[in-house]
Image (cartoon, rainbow, N blue to C red; front, side, top):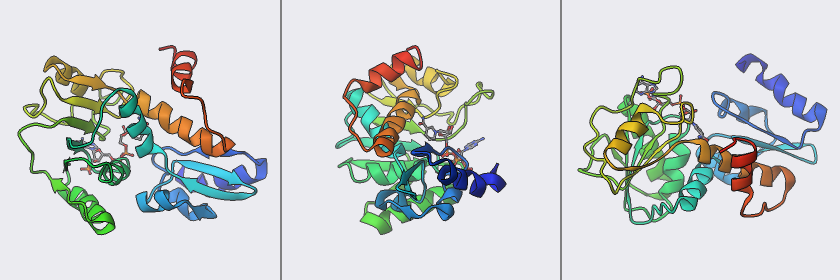
Length: 234
Ligand code: NAP
């Protein structure tokens, strides 16, 4: 509960935990209770990983890099590609900013509330001068990412878009949702021939990156496969 957040954070100090992972809706609120925010988490304006560094609580954000690593693992190279990000919430900002620095060809954000998409576009432009288009869609995209919560259990018959014309058999479609395993958005995209991925891979990778911060180690390359099999039985 948001009102218990401060006590929960103090609990990390009291119990001398090595660190914790933070999920929505606490990723922004938590910042005020930490001792230090690492540079990229500060830029993302959100924290998903808290590390206890000799008593000082330091905030990191591994979400966007987690997604990026997962795409690389799935041989989806975003360099020189047209990217569509659906949604403009807490997950969309780090992804937009991170991807804007990966030599992509273009980024478009499509969101129900245009003001929020414009706010992200302006933020990214002021940060690194990369231009993001808002709600003005191209004919097709190479990579389409759903960062909205639309279609998540129990609302499994909902879909964040109605028009799928910009998705074809050369499009990689990613949904950050992992419950259900195949959202209506992914199913419809797959029916158009697209390569589809759900959010489990990103979840695992952001967690692996968080663990590397907790333990101050580099995990072996096959850790992803081990976690996927042993923890998720996939
Ligand atoms: P958020 O800040 O609450 O943003 C939600 C977004 O969904 C906003 O763009 C919102 O649009 C849109 N939305 C919500 N209901 C809608 C509706 N009925 N119609 C159209 N748009 C709607 O959430 P978040 O933190 O960005 O997280 C978004 C999703 O990503 C969640 O499902 C979360 O579980 C998932 N996620 C997964 C991972 C992973 O590791 N796989 C990591 C982070 C997040 P408006 O701006 O118009 O309100």
